[in-house]
Length: 100
Image (cartoon, rainbow, N blue to C red; front, side, top):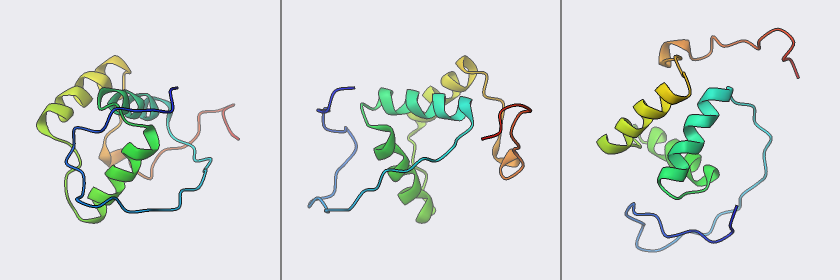
């Protein structure tokens, strides 16, 4: 992946804020990750930047996605056969033979 990216089309804050980022080894459901990567690519963002944005919006009880992005998500969910919903949160278990 290239280290340079186009600026996001999302409205940026007037003054950028310096932060300290850390490398993490989180585990995600495979199809969720594929959809997230698709959204990041669609918006020309790094996956970590997308996740930060989703979290910051959620922390303020704001929706992180525009109607157009929600339509893209719907398409990506179909492509990657992602049938999980919010009701499945905290109910997911590892498939047999797939434990870390």
